[in-house]
Length: 256
Image 1 (tube, rainbow, N blue to C red):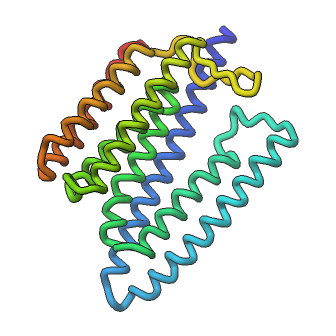
Image 2 (cartoon, rainbow, N blue to C red; image 1 turned 120 degrees about the vertical axis):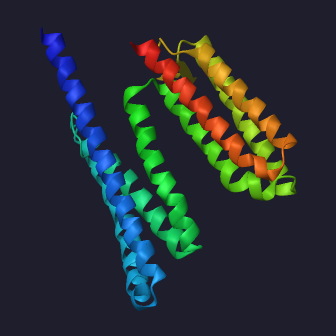
C-alpha cells in the first residue's frame, strides 16, 4: 500500500512538472507570436526591439541566479527530488529565453522566430521523453531530432558543398562515438569509470540492442544524404523523425 502511494506521488510530481514545462513552452511560443507581429510593424518595431533586448538581459540574469540557487541548495544539502521549481530548472529555462532573444536580435528575426516555433515545443517534447522514457532513448531521441533539423535547415541549402561534407563527417564521428559509448556502457552494466570512481550513466535494464539499431539507421540516413539532391533533404528529415517516432513506440510498448 505504501509502495502504491509512493508511486502515485511520483506520478503526480512528474505530471505536474511536465504541465509546468509545457505551459512555459506555450507562453514562450505566444510571446514569439507577439514579438514577430511587433517587429513586422514600423510603428512598434523599436519598442519591441528594445523590449527583446531587456528580455535577453533578464534571461541572462536568470541563468546566473538559477546556477547560484542550485549551488546553494546542494551546498546546504536540500532535498530537491520533489521540487518543481529548482535552480537548474530556472537556469535552463532562462538560457532558452536568452538564446531565443539573441537569435531574434542578431539574425534574420523572421527566420529565427520560425525556427523557434519548432525548437521550443521540440524541447518541451524532449523533456517529456526524459521524464517518462529511459535515459538512452532520451539521448538518442535528442540526437535524432538534431539530425533531422540539420537535414532540414542546413542540408537542403548546402548539399554537395565543402561545408556540407565537413558537417556530414562531424555527424558520422558523433554517431560512431555514441556507438562506442553504448558499447562501453553495455560492457560495464551502464557505468563508466572516471578517476577510479564509477559513474552511472544508464540503468541496468537499458535497451542496448535497440540503441545500436537506432544509431545504425542514422548512419544509413547520413549515407543517403550524400546521394540525394538538396530538394530531398526535407523528406530525409521527415524520415529521421519517423525513425525517432518508431523508437518511441517501441519503448512505450516495452514499458507496458
